[in-house]
Image (tube, rainbow, N blue to C red; front, side):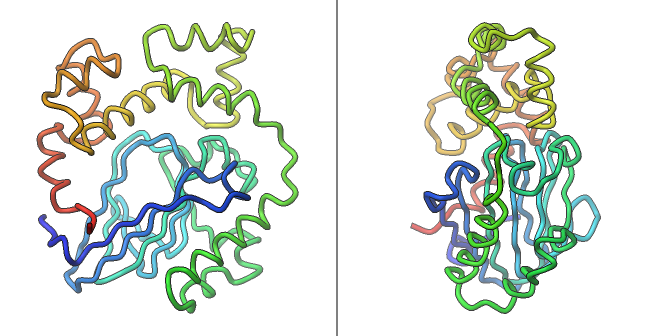
Length: 268
């Protein structure tokens, strides 16, 4: 499906400084057309994500409410939304789910929950506030205030898992996990538990997601002359290996993805 660029506006924002230890980035997507069945691909990126959309949607055939928390994604999926809408996505740091929402990360892997059913959001009527708010800036202020309230009593020490996830984002080579264990002075089992407790997936799986996402970003920004360049720069054994991994996480070949992406270019 091809979408005219002028009906779609995508903005990337930095979180407020007080939230930067928990929120990696913010995306605002505004779709101004009344055509039905807009499709937003959801691919693994290592970041649990809080999403508000002023129009309900569907994912894997199931209804998606206005305010949802997505866990670590492994399998690709698509979010379908009808008519014009505003979507705000808060991409959390990979280890922030428990701190912000008090939920074990493993419970959310490859799934989502309705945030409006959680007591803190329900108590203040967050969803209704967002639906009745004015411009996007007002909606952002409401979400920021909610997240700040959620983290106010956080006392968990994230230094080890923050170091570990940062290390695997920077180093996706074949020796990355061995180097990580050495730097943490930890056994393989200890590192495994660290990731399962805070991220909800194994360190090996997290490393593969980081490797895919870094390559995906390079492809997405057209920073390559041929696919072999991407494969080489991100530690894939060859171009065929990169294409297999890309298909695993997106369900598409890089060529097919680029054809799809052409309909999602942001306004200049």
